[in-house]
Amino acid sequence: MQYRKIFICWLLLAILTNGLHSFDVAGTKEAQTGRYKAEVLKTLRRLILQEAGWAMQQQAVTVTTQSSPRSAGGKHDFFSEGDYWWPNPQSADSAYVQRDGMTNPENFVAHRHAMIRLSQVVGALASAYMVTGDEKYVAQALKHCKAWFVDTATLMNPNLQYAQAIKGRFTGRGIGIIDTIQLMEVVQGLLVMENAKNMDRQAMEAIRGWFEQYLQWLTTHQYGKDEMNAANNHGTCWVMQTAAFAKFTGNEKLMQFCSDRYKNVLLPNQMAADGSFPQELRRTKPYGYSIFNLDAMTTICQILSTKEDNLWRYATPDGRNIQKGIAYLYPFIADKSKWPKQPDVMYWENWPVAQPFLVFGANAYDKKEWLKTWKTLEHAPKVEEVIRNLPVRHPLIWL
Image (cartoon, rainbow, N blue to C red; front, side):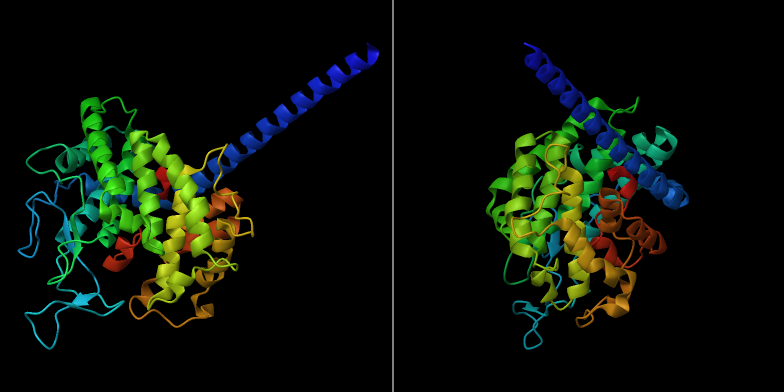
């Protein structure tokens, strides 16, 4: 009986000790995130309020504002054209020809610009709401979101049937799905503002309904399946945006699917043993594409990680993990002159900027040096190509 009492006491002590240890770890992590969040706010506060001031003056611009005669869709259909496709110099009336890495400035980009603008507006307003608590920012954000997703006169159809078309070849392609990564900060901004006193609950429900429809298309249409199975940054971005939209709509089954795909497909098939991304390095813009893919993978970790399923701590059986990916690229962000590959054929001088992987990684692994580098980089890039490939521009709303 005495031994039994001793064992029970030992067991209770072990449970209590482990419980307190778990609490301490959780409390430490929460405090760490608080510190990094405070640093981000201190760095961006002035810019946030400046951008929010701009956003408060903007009227809604949706896909119905402009159209292209080359689109096979209707007034409410998003339309864009393949970036690297040009008129055939041998025959102007024939199908376009490809020039990898070289963007055709004559392509139709109005819808893409409108969507980026929506992302900038909502991201800025949500950030300002976090900083100030002023509900005027919520009302302005809803005005834009209603125009895009609720108002039948101006809304966008919840599909991407006509994205990244190529004249004379395709009316749309699965590759065009990458264009809606711009909607991630829209849904994240709405989540940040969801509990505001003057939030229009009916509008939020309608907006969620739009994203539920889009997710249905994204996961069942052949274009969506093609993009999901892409072996490079396109496959990464499918998971990234699907995860963001699934979180917004409360689709836990789809969130789990994205988490599993990150572990079992993206990491093992895209990352080399040294942490690099060979599929991106073989492109004509290896530096920019490597940065873009790392941003996307770390954003997946930021969206989906939970205490029970922490993607920041996940590693493949042979040791590949997202920390190794950041460690590989970071030296070339801190000092681009060390980049061992050829310079990108375009926009080489415009990278890096304040990449989100530096913020998310710094917070995840308590790497103050990464955040210090992030602070020194450009937080409000003006180059269109950089903006388009930087879907997370308002890191405060993600922390």
